[in-house]
Amino acid sequence: MTRLRVGLALVGVLVLLGILAPVLAPYPPHVQPLDVLRNAAPSLAHPLGTDPYSRDLLSRVLYGARVSLGIAILAVLMAVVVGVTVGVVSGWLGGLVDTVLMRMVDAALAVPRLFTVLVVLALWEHVTVPAIVAILGGTGWFAMSRLVRAEVRAMRARPWIAAVRAVGVPAGRIVVRHVLPNIAGPVIVVATMGIGQVILIEAGLSYLGLGVPQPTPSWGNIIADGQPLLRVAPWVAGGAGLALVMTVLAFTLVGDGLRQRLDPRAS
Image (cartoon, rainbow, N blue to C red; front, side, top):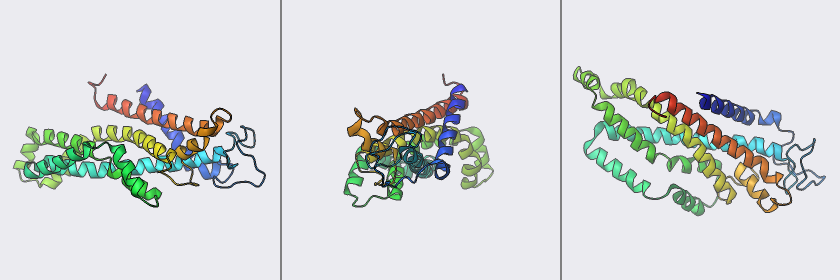
């Protein structure tokens, strides 16, 4: 419970900072002031310092939270919708449908996700934020579908589900009212932990220049701007790096806390 509370508190703070970025940010994140202050150290005017383009880092980190969290949450929601749909159809219908769908999933899982994402983005001429969401969401549902399939098959074999089917209740109603609520726990846990993973992937892509395009702030491209300056101006990458670590830690704590709460057998 302590992990869950700490994680939820951290997530709440990070989401609130992202939502209130237009209010909390002292400067617009794209503006390069006329009085050039490249790589300026933290000060009262710039609490996290400035980057190589004289842009205020606190403003960029706050707006970067909106971008990074937004991409991760939307991509995971997309993966959950697709994965749950495929898993339910496969697990409930069984037979040839199950075989075909799961062989497709197995083939997709055989290729590392990051490799697939890198290939697609490298071939994409002009990457936009919606495109990044679609690519990350479209490559993140395979494991979810296998989890849901296993849960649905276990539920379908239970006597009370057989009794409900025997009295003539339509399959769609059984799935919506009985199956989905009972498999929601594992889905929520996996989705929560998946948000942290997607944030790391997006940051890595932006760091490599394949993710969120400049000048839109993302924690990954902020760290990339500061990487050559780690010895002389560590604050350029430090703020975004700390935010990235805290966010991934927060979602990991929430996921682990939910797992322990929803599964009493978990240690």
